[in-house]
Image 1 (tube, protein in one colour):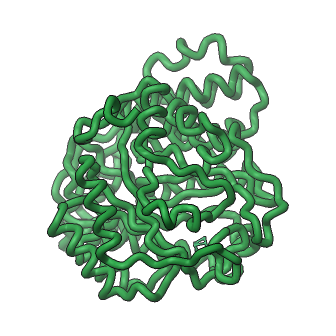
Image 2: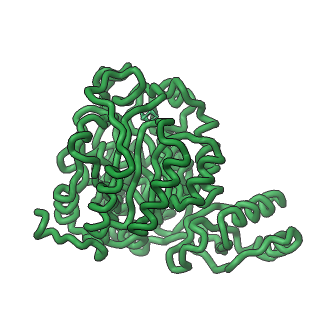
Image 3: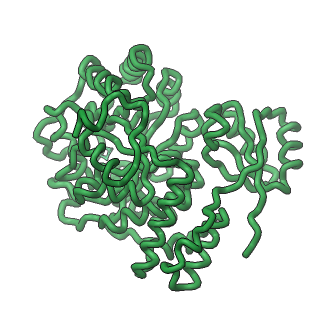
Length: 436
Ligand code: SF4
């Protein structure tokens, strides 16, 4: 077994300083990885630079030469999973699987081919072993508490026509709606009253909401509740992302859906793959906690494509990764395509936890929509977050990106947490007795 390479992690004062430092280091031909900053070092900058120990002196010299300051440097060890091979004794049937699990046990990175192997193996005992390893990784890096967030889908208007989407432009939706500020704030206050710390403001790509309107909303949420704000409003110019970040938005969810360019273009007739990646890079540069995700079971998608998606999440230092099955939506060009499988989606969740480690992995609404136990299963496969749908009931049924969407509420979230043997966060002001 190869020894674990010693690494250091460089923590900067801000994301832009971190990105400048990363560029300067890379310009010397030194390899770096961007990794989520370990929680023990605080949240000064949510992404840090990992370097090999032997490069430390050269890196420090390079930063000094370029007048680039950094806050701290610490020894950094990729998370090991001690005792994993022993635990998986009865699951190991091939040398390949054993070698991959050995690397995970020792904290070594696994390759695209090895990720693909984990996604392709048909051995029941190896598949069970993947879930066991992912659950151990989840427990050791993010613990047993399930993060609960609330989503308000404030507009189902969209100027784009993604072929899979039930609210695409031109799709007959029974009722298009837009929520005004007061109505959105009612939902925000309800979540705040339950003790929830993060609100997700989600919509189609709807220019009705100008940057100014969104800034006013963000400032009001901050003033009245101090909640963390996640935006999920699609592609916008850099300047808009910057203004929204400065106004107080903390996180941004912009899913890549697939890193296979041909499939990306096929499912997104209005979008350009490189532009989507560029938007994600801007969000990272602006210091958003960066969210992405993919769909499993897209037409033509292979396990190799999914392995590439997982490495994209890692390389882009994505902190929130929404992984859901493709679900055909009525009235769209993809309505008769077969839906993605629950089993493969869960396996992708598990492998993503093993590769990306310290990230938020939601038990997605899409999974719950095709399997009533989907959220419980996802929490047992490495997921650690649940997003409640807090859109007012009169609008909910009109925000159907895919058909038969499950409306995750407090009751179903609490049930999934209980059934999976996990813990509710202490910040909640509402108990399971009041809800169940
Ligand atoms: S997926 Fe998003 S951008 Fe595409 S049509 Fe649906 S709401 Fe619009």
